Image 1 (cartoon, rainbow, N blue to C red):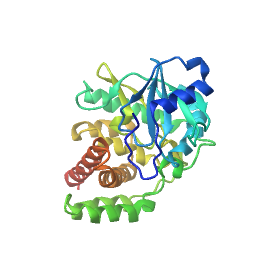
Image 2 (cartoon, rainbow, N blue to C red):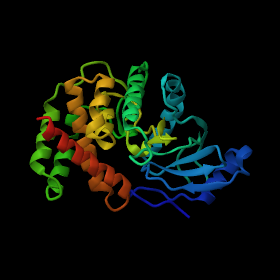
Image 3 (cartoon, one colour):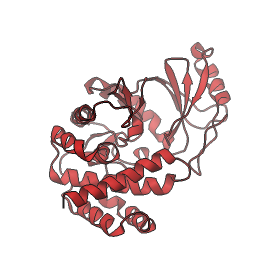
Image 4 (spheres, one colour):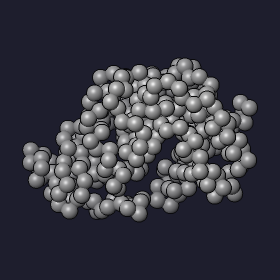
Length: 304
């Protein structure tokens, strides 16, 4: 069985391919069972390798640019973070008709974060703030600036202007276009990030946060990793947190008004693009995008 395709330039992968790759390049793991993991992730196809590992195969040429970055930087930043993050165990090379480098990671147990899996939303807001505060304070020297490798997360919002306005226009029958334009223009008018770039996760969605025993336990999928404007990491306030805990998160993170406003702009922009792109191929991500739009609009109305 192969993976469901979400992109026009996505390649085919399946368990047989993974078995051949592991057998040839990591023979010490060749006898372990391999099973495809159903995931809402868009960049990598996942295959469980035994009980303690997972194989990640990039789905597209752009996703393949993340491999070297993750292997280089995740082990360096992990010791400074209060939540577990993926630990790379091996990097495979192109072979067996598969064109890119690929990875073997330690398997992290847990369920995707949601209202159902998180017992204490207040604690989750604090944990997220502590994680981001720690990440943003890690020395960024030598870290990669935003680019295709991290879907340009962390760039100035103005660089997303044309894409976001086009999405607003295309979805004007679904969401309130007037309010969307007000939220977007407000975020563009906020002061730009003037401090040195800092580390960002870049894709802090509920599907990239793991929960065990009702508490946040790990942050995964660092394809958006880079150094840039940390406002993009605040989109979690609108993709996951409720209005009730959004202020708790903001206070714990000590975010200034301009960064918070840009963060709401990131949430709206991400939501619009994601909702439009994934409605047919990834309903989970499309629903997260829908929530980001609705929460950003409601938050703007409540605070303007």
